Image (cartoon, rainbow, N blue to C red; front, top):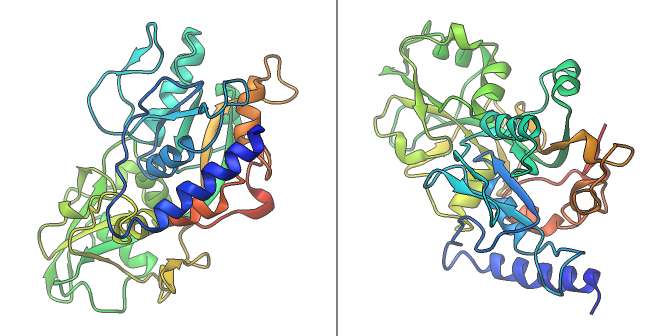
Length: 329
């Protein structure tokens, strides 16, 4: 059986198993064996990358060997990514994963091959200076979550202006409830994306905000005034039993009157949508001085082995990108 057949057969089996995961949440953890391409970083995409790692075959390996080893954002630290050496502090979040990849480039150790990121490059100059390329593979959206038993859950939701005022502490009550706004931990891509969308810089975050909670963990919302940004894809995967359910009793709010989900799927017309990325060394892409055929085959172009797993990507709550998947532009 050729590699294409292996990938297709594995994808069908895994996607079918995931579709049945309403009965039992999938266990997601670090890869059980060392693999050719090592990824770290974003909490938002850790589970879908782990699932992709269980179906994307290594074209250079023996039949049925796997290519992608994606390490969770949280867990014991340090994490060991190669059989010899390569013990690194576990990166928690997009920016931490990108920093780990930058450090790896500087040291030349090649303990990390890609960073999972839920935020894109801030500007082209930063991308060039760090010699990184952000390759999109799916679409997510971000809204805020509130407790279902709170007056904040009024069916109307919030406006961008209200969220700006909540996170600068200019608006401290809503529907008679004292607000206790939460943000993901520093280094989170969701944190930086959300703040940028509501027009708040890090220095402008108000003193009423708790900015230390782990992203996409609804159990952290334990009082009726709590409000926190939340990945719509992660919420869908959690509430559908695809991954461990951490949504607690939270519900997703509308934004500018727009619902974050349509018929249970991510609403691609939601105001706060974003691409999610795998970030790689530009030098290892086609035309670079050290092209990596395995990395290119996994991530680059709409026919790459990752982009080909559209059904699996949707099972994890994300929307697909079509021909834009795998773009290196």
